Length: 84
Image 1 (cartoon, rainbow, N blue to C red):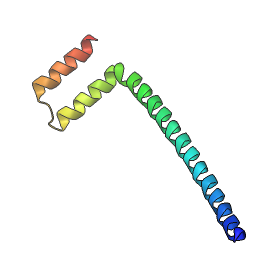
Image 2 (cartoon, helix red, strand yellow):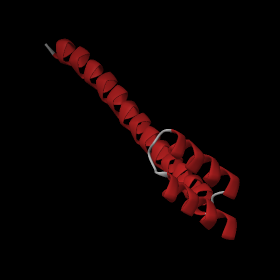
Image 3 (cartoon, helix red, strand yellow):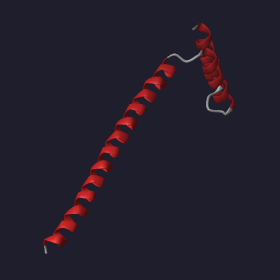
Image 4 (tube, helix red, strand yellow):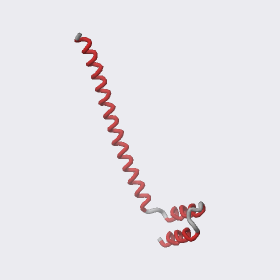
C-alpha cells in the first residue's frame, strides 16, 4: 500500500516543480514587458515633446489635403511653425 502512495507523491512533486517553473517564467515575462513598455513610453515622449518643424508642416499639409482642416487653419499653422 505504501508503494502506491510513493508513486503518487513522486508525480505530485514533478507537478509542483513544473508549476513553480511556470510561475517563475510568467513573472520574468511580466517584468520584461513592463520594463519594455516604460522604455517605449519614455522614448515616445522624448520624440513627441519637440517635433521637427518640417514634420509638423508635413502633417499640416497632409491634413489640409485630406480636408481635415480648412485653408485658414492651415495658413495659421504654417505661420505658427515659421515663427518657431
